[in-house]
Length: 283
Image (cartoon, rainbow, N blue to C red; front, side, top):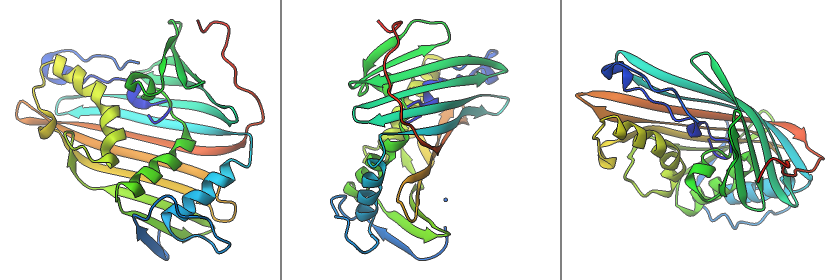
């Protein structure tokens, strides 16, 4: 999931047909503005109304503190007639801006069994440890690392990418909040549409595992059923309040449809004033 990704918890579901399951590894009414305006829009003295202007204000607000703490909850699952598999994830994420660093401590739960998971990102390198296993390290651009890293502040960059890619962004003000929303109703795994890049990256490990189990569906046959990305800001301060990213795919298999789903929710728990340093156990 984004920067401590629940899709890093790979889920197998073919056991519903072949006799054994693999364990997982690893929000508005009111006035609105729809726009694909450039993310370079500047913040003026008047309240911004374009996506770019709102994002500028949010970036400035988030830079106003040395760091932030977020609560992250996620769920990932595969469903098929006769069987299914699901995993959940919860974590506390702390991140700093200068220098940029992140630490997440969480737990993956599947079939009643829980596994601790810890993630650090320092100097552009991600370090992941599951349970008592060894640390795995790699550049944050590596999909295997990126799918383990959930940085809520990265949502600002993602929404800028939506704007630059010409996606429709709805901006709504209601009840003291500003909500930015992107919805993609359909697509294919094979689409090179920037708005689908994160969902494709996160589902890819599961697709590869299903193929190892006998699924032969091509990327062009695997269909996006939905993608919703919602970023909520405080209407006065423009600080991030919450972020929710969810999507689903259907994968043809022996005349049936395997359904993959994922949802990640992040909530701002306030300022983090500490430092983030790697533990001695990280090689």
